[in-house]
Image 1 (cartoon, rainbow, N blue to C red):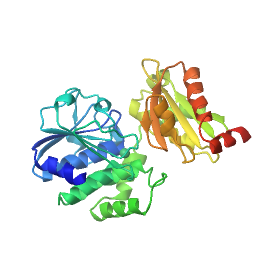
Image 2: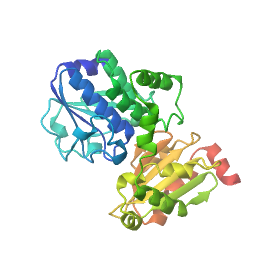
Image 3: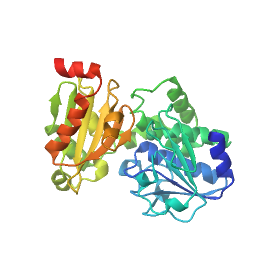
Image 4: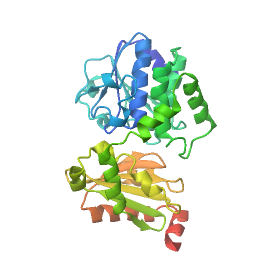
Length: 321
Ligand SMILES: [Mn+2]
């Protein structure tokens, strides 16, 4: 499939690269790297992201030229990264375009003209790295920095389930190409806003525990009080997962329309993508998300009930603790 993707790229000239709303490190890093690889192949390429670049990724090379827009500009093809549908981009006009879908999610779908979905890799960045290799584009320091940041964030700093020797081989290649691990980490893990740390305090003061489950939430009122943005909620769920006997952590964020955005994280025993998919969302075995109607108490009990119905080992844990 990689060969096919490269063939279709070579046959075209003007590209738009995009990813989903609320883009994460892999979405942003892979899109920035991909667009630069295309430019080094002699193509016109721009990154268009509905929500623009979150603050912690704004130091990445090429981030300053990302176009924040509601529709795709004229192009010969659009490359969608990390999306299971065109809808995930919130960009208008995609139905008229030639679409190339590159993804590594198990929930990935064949919605585009070409679909390269490989759920054996930890990050789309690994696929973009392979694309550069096959296209004979030298991975320079800037491209390596984008790809390393994508790989680092999607593996939870090389700590998530599925991280293996192959992941480190790719990371090694990227460091050899000029990515600076400490510098990449500093921008992401020591680059938070004050609002985010205040949100963390509020979320942790709402910590609930039930056996191997932990959940926290943030209200619109708190978001406004701290002057927080949506992106400031990114990663808060991981603090609830950090306790020794917790298997699954859930983060509920109240949306302006009073629905709730739900982030699910698992240490590996429980497949949380099945739970998210049940409510119309998706993701990975260990990290997934969905949206659900409020009020909060109803949203919490629907999600928690669904988790109680999950695998036997997990239920045993729930009953005995
Ligand atoms: Mn990813």
